[in-house]
Image 1 (spheres, rainbow, N blue to C red):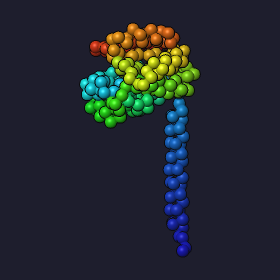
Image 2 (tube, rainbow, N blue to C red; image 1 turned 180 degrees about the vertical axis):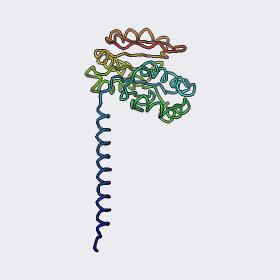
Image 3 (cartoon, rainbow, N blue to C red; image 1 turned 45 degrees about the vertical axis):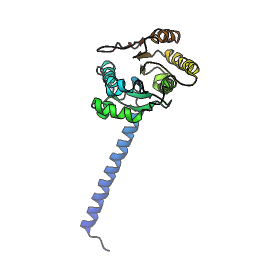
Image 4 (tube, rainbow, N blue to C red; image 1 turned 30 degrees about the horizontal axis):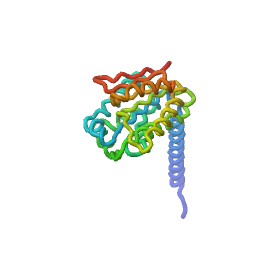
Length: 234
């Protein structure tokens, strides 16, 4: 087949356009990779008790969603970082606690209403047990392994919404492992908050966090209005 001069010119133009599109795609890919590896300054974890005794309060009554929105307002509204992270975890009959991870903006888009968040939580929950210690430790070790958290470049806050009543087969051993994880986390200078804690567990957990070397922490039986948050160390 013989190509006319006009046909050749059209083919050259098409090839040039394809080259531009491929170049743009490669540039976009490089930008996405760069954004993924860009340093973040804040990492907040919220671990939510979804065991049988706590699921209604956290999900149906919307307490977890209300707390989460307070976290975003307290730690992110006055901060301009776009690559900061929020991590969600669940505490119930499994030690596989991690649920969701993303930026504060992505979280607001994923869960724009309390009802959307409630459905998400109920879908993930295993109410047949309360492996609280193991679930908290799993999430704690995960955030502590973040390179920006471990090297001190990112500030981190770890929040637990639970009565802290564990019914695992060897609860004393699992609690000791959690205290060890809190000790390692506390040495990094990050903050911890326990909320909705059973009234008989408040004083013991305050003492354990002191012994673990966590300088900024709160342990509260419950809260009204805005939760009393610990302040990250400067």
